[in-house]
Image (cartoon, rainbow, N blue to C red; front, side, top):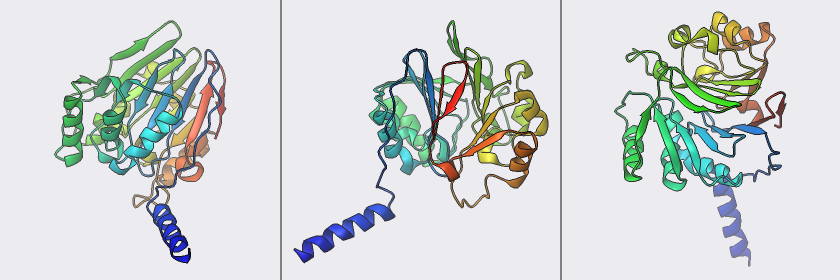
Length: 281
C-alpha cells in the first residue's frame, strides 16, 4: 500500500512539474446575439479563440508547439467541434507551433496565413499538416474580407506589402467588428506595419497589443488612432525578453487604457452583445 501511494505521489509531482495538470474551464452558454473572445494563457505566445455571434468559431494563432494539446483541450471544453476560420498570423513558433495539433485534431474551414516562409521545423510541420488534411492556405493580406455580414465583419488590415526585413511585420492583423464593438488583433506587427494600416479602420474598443507588449510595437500615434478601452497583452511570466516593456505599459497608462495581462491573470475572457463588453476573467 505504501509503495502504491509513493508511486501515485511521484506521478502527481511529475504532472505538476510538466504542466500537465489543467484547471477545467466552465462557461455559461452564450446568449443569442453574444460573442465571446478567449485570450488563452499560452505563456510567451499568442492564441485567441473567438466564438462568433453567428455560431461559428475562429482561432487566431495557437501558441508554442508544446501548447497544442492544451489549446485543443480548451477549444473542445467550449463545445466547439469545428473552427470555421483559422489565422496563422506569421511563422514564428510561439504563434504557429500549437496550430499543428489543432489542425490535426479539430476540423478547420478556411486557413489564412501571410505569404512568407520560414526555415524552421515547426513551419515545415504546419505546412505538411495542412496539406495532409487536404487543405490549403488562403493568403492573409490587407484588404481581405473574411466575413461581411449584416452585423459582423472580419477583415485583415495587414500586411500591406509583400516584403519586410522583419518577420514580425508580415503579421496578419485582424479586425473584428460586431455591431458597435471593435476588436483589433495585432499578432507581432510592429511600428512599420502600424504606419501602413488604413487609419479609417483602426478604431477599436479592444486592442490585442502587438508583439507581447514590446517597445517595438504600439506607437503613441497608432494608439491614438485605435483609442481602445482595453489593451490585452499576451506574455509569459518572467519571460527572457522582458515583455511587456515598461515603455509600452507607461504609454498605455498615460492614455488611460485598462491593461489586461495573461502573465498576471491567466486566460482572459470577454463577452459582448455588440454594445457593451464584459470581462469575465
